[in-house]
Length: 229
Image (cartoon, rainbow, N blue to C red; front, side, top):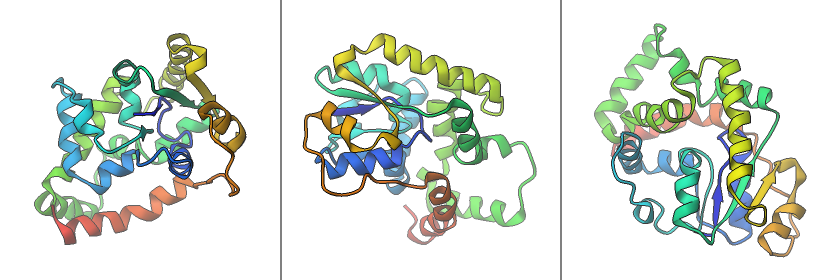
């Protein structure tokens, strides 16, 4: 592993994934990797529920990792790969929470409210056709919600405080020459300087993560039902 992303999901991690792969640090592991290969859900569930973490197996074939669930284990990964550089993606904490609430926290926040019949039917079909992916909410809760936020993802003030504390903890833990605190709007220059590579002659990737998340969700669910495991 050459690069470890310590930034929370919804801090430009999809853009960073694309940027790292353009710079030759791919494949880059991201939550989308887990979604695309549901067998990985059980690997993370085991870790999240206290099982041993075989990092070499989990990240086999990947030169970098960003986003959740990897970012939840940034300390462990930084220790396991002492030569890897660490990138902490950041953004305004309040805007981060608003984005997370509408995307990655949405399912858990809505879990206690009655769901439309279409969603209930879809969930049952996914549980039947793709049992590994059916436990995705449990995995996400164990590795992200419970581990980082004490299960309180609906509490805005609490989550914003956790976000701020996380930034300070990473800054205090990782040596300055090994750490880049990065906002994707800064573009190629600081990222390439930190990684010691030339600036590519292409625009920095700009992924509209919230729009992409919403647009892909129906197709993702349908694909799981059609393809099954």
